[in-house]
Amino acid sequence: MNFYYRIQAIFYKELMQLKRDRMTFGMVVMIPLIQLLLFGFAINTNVRYIPVGLVDQSQTALSRILVQTVSATQVVSFKSQYATVPEAEQAIARQEVRAVLIIPEDVSQRLVRHGTVGLATPPATDEETSRPIAQWLTDGSDTMVASSIKSLRNMPLAELLSKPANRSIPTFEVTLLYNPEQRTVVNIVPGLVAVILTMTMIMFTSAAIVREREHGNLELLINTPLKSIELMLGKIIPYIFIGLIQVSLILCLGYFIFHVPLNGSLAALAAITLLFIAASLVLGLVISTIAKSQLQSMQMTVFVLLPSILLSGFMFPYEGMPKVAQSIAEALPATHFMRLIRGVVLRDVDISSMSFDLIWLAVFTVLGLMVAAFRFKKRLD
Image 1: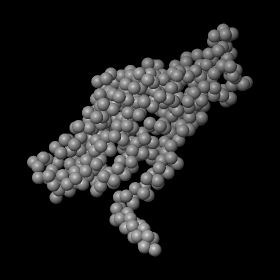
Image 2: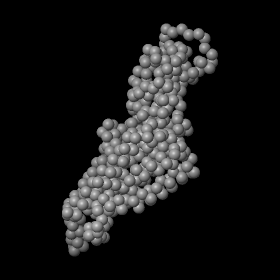
Image 3: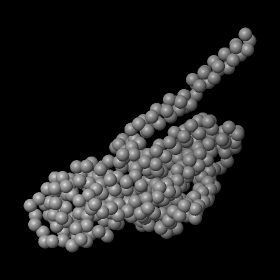
Image 4: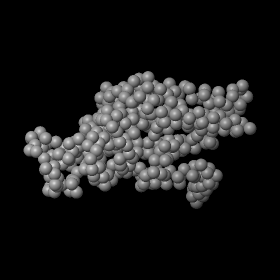
């Protein structure tokens, strides 16, 4: 019987300890709850309302009806109109839109050859007859978005045609930019940089202050002439070099093993990487000032890591998430870095055209550093 009493005593002790540790108890409830909500509501592989642009070279009533017909599928949502194709390509590169529909000047004649009501047209050559009605330029770096646009390739136009169209001729031509082969690894490798940096950088610094307390070094730090901000900076600087090594390793292996292109400049890549590393390290420091033990710091790191993987656009398209999930994603540094690194590495985008993400990361870093220093100073009091 003593055997069972001893086990019972330890059982009650662990329950009481868990009851006092509100952070751990909260994580026990919150982690499965957050995962359920993320997977149930936010994760959606059936992408709808993809933001797209329009280049209407026809400017006719028929072209406007065609746009309305495409919009009715709910696969895309027209956000902008561009005067020229090069201007539209730049918008795709900056990710203002994910695809652009180009309606040619002779769209009326092309529709006639597909069986349009009430229009006469001169006899067409075989080449003219085989032409699609219009063309999609699509960001092929995101394979899910590209697949959704490609689903419109043979879209029926019953409202515009008096007879069934020739199924051997696609309704739309689809041109995939940046990843014409639709290789998933091209999209995954740059995104993996964001995920690995988020995981390692936050993990390294989330236990920084807690570790000093548990090792009995906090009193020593208090008695030094170091200011709080100096201590915070000293904590994060060594890990910046570790982060740069990780990025170099991932991109080099991706280039030589999986043939992932590095289209952008190394200077731009270094600038955005340093900014994101700093933001992640600062976030870890803020966690370290909140957590009371290294176990709690690890739990909070997981709490940040899960949304960073699921909501940043790494695994699932940002456009497929509901508005609430998109709002949460915008608060995560990984979301902004995901756009930046894919823009630089895959599309060779000038980072000045993605100034919003740069400014957001910079402001997050400065504010986070101030919060971490303030909380540490407050704890000293």
